[in-house]
Length: 209
Ligand SMILES: Cc1cc2nc3c(=O)[nH]c(=O)nc-3n(C[C@H](O)[C@H](O)[C@H](O)COP(=O)(O)O)c2cc1C
Image: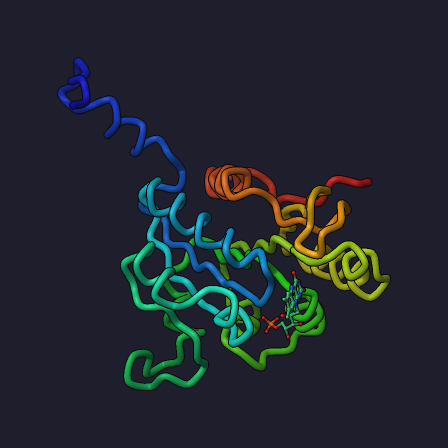
């Protein structure tokens, strides 16, 4: 049981009300990579800190982690399609962003980064990146060879120039069984960055190697 504080609330209620994530609306875009399993932990952490989270999965993301996982963790239906007139008559890319305080794409695949850098909008996650009026942050994840490709670096540079925040990636053990750069930032670190941005801090930029 939580201890009462002198003002009559509880210490845990106070902590929640001070948390910049509490009561905020976050769209969590998930694209197709092995790190999609870590996106489930991101969703769980954000919900635990009293954020409202709507998960949006690309077709490839759904091959890595199923919709029921995100639906259960967020206690909301998962959005996957641009065209879903029964649920979103105006289009999910409009209705979801109207309420959103922040759009996070984690993991952000090389493909998603390329589409976003070009302004393509051929699925719901990339369309949301264009229609968002809130801060947009991506957490890239891919193998080191992909991450080091000039094309990927160009796309990340373009996104930074366009005002998109970038978290990571980190160096470490990769799903391709190699150590290198490309590992998605850890869920706890991502949640902290989001809290900082929602508290009015700057958008994250990757640390120079
Ligand atoms: C086992 C496996 C792992 C993959 N991991 C990654 C990854 O970590 N990062 C990445 O950018 N692409 C990865 N891919 C490739 C993407 O899934 C593929 O480019 C896909 O088209 C991305 O689609 P999306 O951006 O619409 O989600 C992987 C593919 C497979 C089969």
